[in-house]
Length: 117
Image (tube, rainbow, N blue to C red):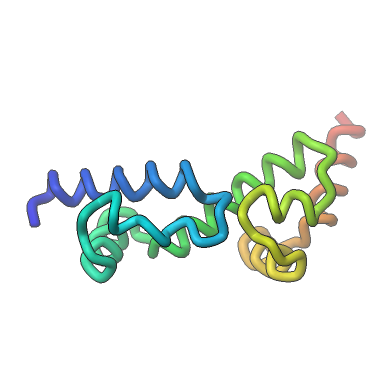
């Protein structure tokens, strides 16, 4: 597979994920969008992005959660749902693994930092 084809596949995957990451099974119909089977597009994606598709989705959801925690008054459970994670404890586990701190503690630190400024 040519590098240009690989780049196009990766671009389509990223576009699809960014459009649908809030949906629990956002990859369910991905093969219909890129016309390539899972093992092929997973390998191409990982080679080009240095992340698995799952890792990319987790990173994107975490980044969006950080933004929502910083910019909104949504409670943690609402933030979880807004980024496509329906379970509160699953969200906390994922957030802590990515950020090294719980979502609630993260928000509290951000609030304290804003008050100090």
